[in-house]
Structures are given as C-alpha cells and as structure tokens.
Image: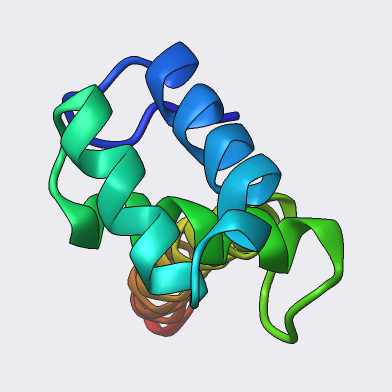
Length: 106
C-alpha cells in the first residue's frame, strides 16, 4: 500500500480492519468509523477515506483501485515524456531540413 499522508501504513491498516470487524456492533458504518477514529487518533474523515479505498481495492465498491491509479499515473507520465521527445524531434527535423535546403541551393 502506498504511503498517503502522515499516518503510518500500519495505523491505516489497523483502523480499516477494526472498522470492518466492529461495524456489526454499531448502528451504521459511520458510527464504527467514528469509534475507531476516537480510539486511534486520526480524524473520522481520514478513517472513512481509508475504508472507502479498502472497499474499492477489495472490489466491494466500484471505482479505480490503488494499483490502477498508480498505473494510470505512470502511463500519463510516460505519455508526457513521449510528447516532449516528439516535439524536440520535430524541431530538430525542421532545423536540419532547413539547413540541408540552404546547402543544396548554394
């Protein structure tokens, strides 16, 4: 699991596990999230986001998983690099094409 925010991965994993294990003892998942947040220290909203991410990664909730998100980010970075290289090659091609044309006319 990638490192998000300031909380250690162990704390996030423990909080998510506690919510999943104890949500049946509460009236709603939100109550379980608030209880776990009070016990462990992070905000309830942080715990809620961790739970949603875990549900998405586990297939219980639709959405883009963490692995897919990382793959998309890598592909977008590669795409930017390739576009930049293509622009450099186009500029070099135009420069050398003009240079060869001048030499040919002389």
